[in-house]
Length: 110
Image (cartoon, rainbow, N blue to C red):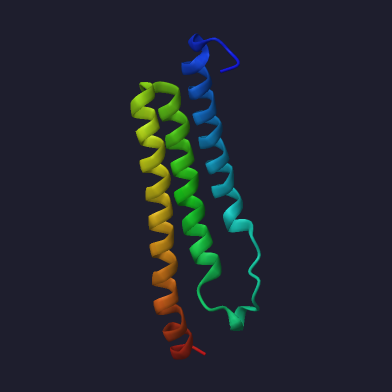
């Protein structure tokens, strides 16, 4: 370590808060990404999936930020993992749901 051990807790809290902030910013940017496909060629509901994932990661980032600010260090570290993985699993699930239903819905409503 380049700094005294007494700085460990503060540096861990700040790095956790920065991680939470980065996750929230990523969540804010996700819905703004443009689809790489034309609308009639999309294999899934691009905008719906990215809006949902944006919300999930923005909420997870806020939870991580507040958790790192207020909780004991050990609990904050566990919360970081749980919040991020929850957002990721829900987001992946939303994409699979969209993949399973998007084409069928598009065929019914041309």
